[in-house]
Length: 173
Image 1 (cartoon, rainbow, N blue to C red):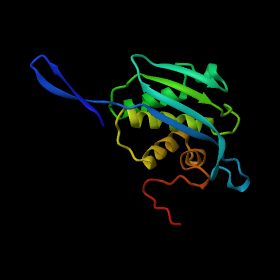
Image 2 (cartoon, rainbow, N blue to C red):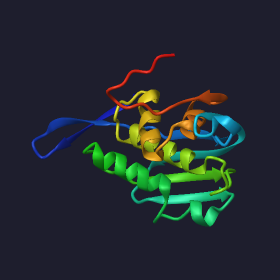
Image 3 (cartoon, rainbow, N blue to C red):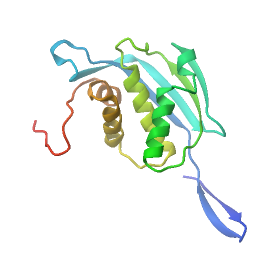
């Protein structure tokens, strides 16, 4: 990573971290798969694509399906999740400029909320320098979604089988 130094008042150098832009491409998913309801998830070949970079103020350029809803700064699941994760982690909220292309129908059973939640968590992890693994980010998005089926398929791709477990129980497979 590139680093730069600045001097403040007493001429003591302070190291500032350069935050690089982030590109996300998250697939639509389905988890309403017969007897695998809320357990089996399937990634599909249409996507939520986001290019994000630090900005002076929040801004969204939205294209594709539902650009009016996806481009709103208020009541936006991606930004609300991003802010909440950073606040919960005790980190400063860095405003972002998002260029968002959405191909996922909203509210139609294609995993739009899973993709939005996962995007918000991944943005917070990157721009808040949380240091989470992909698995930790997926777990956080699953916790927020309430069930892991769509989030697991969105993050891992392909077809997934998942179940929520309680923290004091171990899964055996």
